[in-house]
Length: 169
Image (cartoon, rainbow, N blue to C red; front, side, top):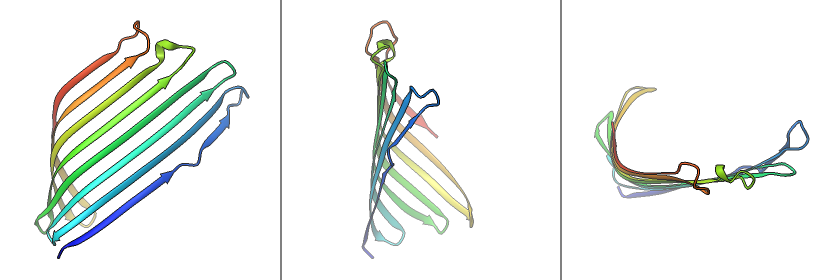
């Protein structure tokens, strides 16, 4: 029974702006989150999926003499297969890629201005068992490459660069 389905979710936060009690500092916040999933069910006990997600958050703290800005961006791509093994067991096998990027800018304090970057391509499997209506356990094994760095705009602050293979149960 070949069956296709698609789902999407779009969230755009209402921009927030407020003034602190001191009537000097102002804070602004904007965010959006986009999700898209495509599913293919070739048989009743099997499902293939592709999921995409993109989220962005922007914040500002403003004073008459200072302006701090922070932007966080996250993207994810997940390709997976879910197989029903027994009536209450599911096995998921997949490939996933996550990317997180953060920019923090404080023009008056350049030692605190930085960029952070994290990327993790990974393969994974997960065994899910439902043993009651609202109870289940889920055990997964993840193996991936983690690449992360933080770079400050000035040389007197410690930056780092870390690339490792990671496994988690």
